[in-house]
Length: 174
Ligand code: GDP
Ligand code: MG
Image (tube, rainbow, N blue to C red):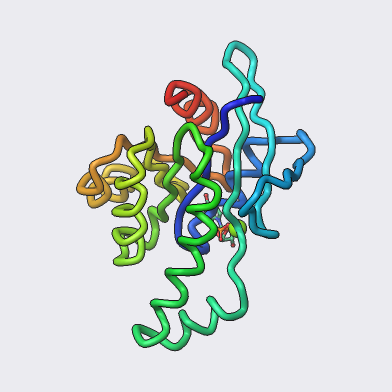
């Protein structure tokens, strides 16, 4: 079967928007691999001249996780566990990781926390800096993410900026 790449990142960075951009009209398909959460979405990335690969959106923020966020630091542990459980199930068979961050919010503690886990997986990883919606602030928006230690690519899932480059860079991780 095809190698697949997992989208990992805290809620609201734009993973699902990117997922939809990447799969275009390719129907999302579901797999019943063991340990897979109900929220998991898998699709196919196909571009002319590139090897095809699967993409997995580790999607879902549960109501409990949402409560944990609104409860602040006291609730954050359960929230992190929830995201990590999904990500780790998906990462078990993955070829590479697209670690998605939000170029408007900047680098947050939860990004660093998740990045540390991704780093420990030892998989080829691209840091996708999403919501870079205009070129004028691109350098500024990118700057603080260098410290994560992953190669970076600015994109805008909403406007379609750099989506072709994203497909190329992801295919190059396989
Ligand atoms: P997820 O929780 O990581 O799956 O994030 P979503 O894909 O659900 O997106 C969260 C929010 O960010 C939504 O309101 C999206 O419309 C918005 N969003 C996604 N990509 C972009 C982008 O490139 N630019 C901007 N400005 N907003 C975006
Ligand atoms: Mg989502």
